[in-house]
Length: 412
Ligand SMILES: Cc1cc2nc3c(=O)[nH]c(=O)nc-3n(C[C@H](O)[C@H](O)[C@H](O)COP(=O)(O)O)c2cc1C
Picture 1 (tube, rainbow, N blue to C red):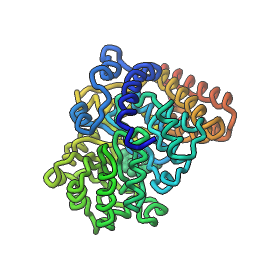
Picture 2: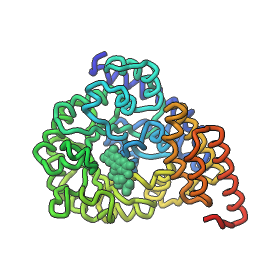
Picture 3: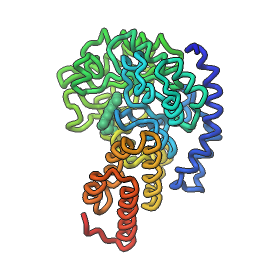
Picture 4: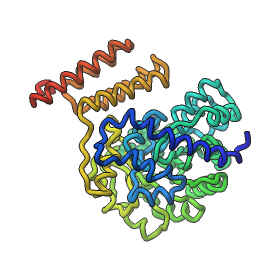
């Protein structure tokens, strides 16, 4: 199958995805206020955004889910979309591994849950088999969210090739990683290390833009360290080679995740570039999002860690910044159903043992603000027995329902 066949396939994919969106979302939309009718209605009102321009028109300002390795897999992205978000970004995909046809990387790069499953079933270990799996069985709903696949690497040609593969796998947008601070990534001149090598960074951006028909975006930090803040000058260079949107994590590489994100550090960008940019880092509440937009002058926000255990947060942020509406979090009963569904989906997606281990971090995040959380985690983290874990989850939430009802919380 030729890469150039994508547009035709995507028309079919989009049609099926739109149809499936309403069905898939009804399972998870337990929290929706029926009077707002927004999600399913939006499905009708706002067809899948096929370009960033449409996305910015439909969601002003938009709220994106940040890429998070080991977390924003197809399941989590689908879950966040089911509540409402403008776009979701995949975990970073190693361009080297993808062009070598690494099976796990292909699965990770699959835009939808069903595509990843179809791909696994097909035992595909080559590009053409993977495309076949995606196009024959891969359509399911990513809902009204745009699907953004993030590529990571340091060789312009390999990055371009991997972007093409991701385009053929159904990505709506390709994002380039120039923000990852991890030592093993920067030691290969990838991630935020590219901000130190502006020439290479711009060549990578140009190569990827020229390789695909879909929009290309880029995520970076303020700079390498406090003495080398170059996101403003780099932004202009990226715009000049055709990058369509930027997301800035408002810390330097050397800060890693410490200190506080400086939203105002990017406010000048609006005078330097015409393309939209997103503010990222430490946005934890709808009020934070409003403040971040004000201080950064950004056209939208990108939310990472705050969505862990709260996949509904992006929806709450959208309601607040679009309509100044305060949307309640799901009730505890609803949260229990969301956790159980996410857990079951994870077991099905990754297999039982791997699924249990993958989900421990999610249990930790979901239980974070509830009473008795540390004892609950201790218990489930020691077990690989699915029915025992499910019983523990039920008991934990039930004890919280009771405490909630009587307004008591003596365990924490
Ligand atoms: C566990 C984890 C994994 C991450 N993986 C990626 C990644 O794959 N690509 C990327 O560009 N940023 C990655 N990031 C950075 C986030 O996208 C985001 O920029 C950062 O967490 C700051 O935003 P936040 O305060 O909203 O979480 C990761 C962050 C975390 C915590």
